[in-house]
Length: 89
Image 1 (cartoon, rainbow, N blue to C red):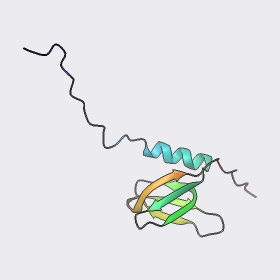
Image 2 (image 1 turned 120 degrees about the horizontal axis):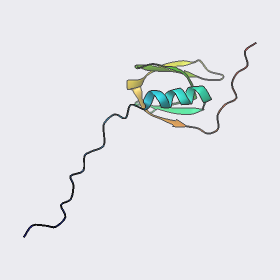
Image 3 (image 1 turned 90 degrees about the vertical axis):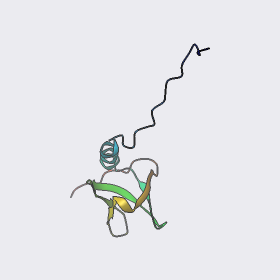
Image 4 (image 1 turned 120 degrees about the vertical axis):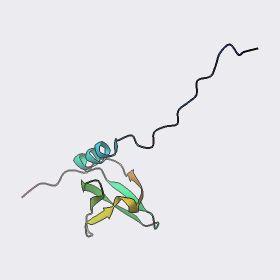
């Protein structure tokens, strides 16, 4: 006897959603404080000022700014409310 309802095969989720650039742009425009955990376990904080397909620039207050290669990042998490943008002199 054949089953009356065949279950449709589920496709696995895509490996890439192509939303990374939009998300990084949003974080940078709002100067959202973020924590970045690197593959070696170190965590750095600041806000994303610039990004491209290979790296991001993390701007930090009271510490040197960092250029971080994306392949060295384990994850990026938001730290809360957006910063107030710096005023240009």
